[in-house]
Image 1 (tube, one colour):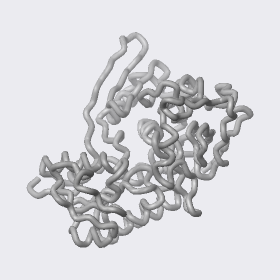
Image 2 (spheres, helix red, strand yellow; image 1 turned 180 degrees about the vertical axis):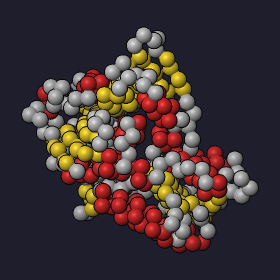
Image 3 (cartoon, rainbow, N blue to C red; image 1 turned 60 degrees about the horizontal axis):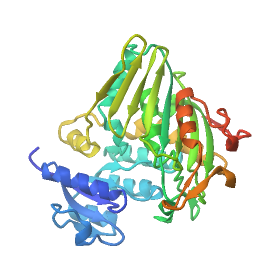
Length: 385
C-alpha cells in the first residue's frame, strides 16, 4: 500500500487509548496516518503515544473531518452518540470503524445502518473477536460434523469491576441518561463480545435470524443497569444460544464461548484466540489462531476490495439482544445477603456466581432454571420478535 490512509479518532481516552496504540502500530507499518483527534478537551503531549506526530485536535467532529481530509473515522465515544457521529461521517463520504455496541436501541441501529448504506460508505463494527481466524475455523469444524449435530451454543463471562468503574463517566452503568437510551449493561457493553461471538459461531448474525429472546437481569452494584445477567436467544435454525455474564465474579477468568455438539464440544477463549476441541474417541486438541485487525481489514477493503469482516447487517442479531435488554423490566437489585464488598478492591462480589455462569454456558439454562436463590421466582422477560 503506497499511501497511508488518513484517520480521525473520535474518543481517545478510556478505551480510545487502545485505538491510539493500534493506530500507532498501523502507522508504523505505513497503513494509516492519524490525521486528527476529536475530544472535548485536547489530549496533552503526555497522553499522545510517541510516534503519532502532531495530529490536529478539535471538539468539532465534522469540522475535523473536513479539515483533515480523513478517509476513515474511528468512533469510540459514549454509546448514545454513535449514530449521530456515524451519520456525520457518512454524509462526508468518510468510512467508519464504529465501536461496539453500535447503538443503544434497534431503532438507532437501523437509523445508523440505513444512513451509512444510503451514503455509500462502509462501516465496520468493532467486535474485535470476529476478526479472529478461530471463527471461520470453528465454523468449518461444525460444518464438517467434527462434534456431531449442534445442540446449542453457550457463552460465559465472569469478570470483575470495582465500584469506581461505574463512576468513570456520567453514562456508565446507566440504562438511560437525560431521557436518552444508554443500555450500558454487562451483556451489551463489557461482555458484548461473548454475545456477538456466540451468535456468530451459530450463524445467527442478522436480525431476522432471531426468533425469541429471554432475559434475566440483576445488579449487585448500586447502578441503574445490570451487572449479573443471562440471556437465551432462540434462533431461526433452532440452535439456542445462552450467554451468562457477571462483573461481580469471585475469581475473574477469561470469557469464552462453547459450541455443544452431540458428540463433543468446542471451547473458544475469544480474547486469546485459543480453541479446545473435545470429541468422542479422540484426545483433546488445542489450537491457537491469529487475528485480523478490524481497522486494517477496513483499509484493505477500501484499497483492494477485501471482504469486510463485521458489517452492520452482521450485528443485527446482537442488536436484537440489546433491544430485548432495553425493553426488559429494570434489573432487579440483588438482596443484601447475596453479595458483599471486597474492601481491598472496593468491588462487589456475588458468592457462587462464577459456577452459575459456567453452568449456564454448559447446560444452556438461565439463572432461575439453575436454582440461583436470588433469581427466584423467575424474573424472565420474553420478547418475541
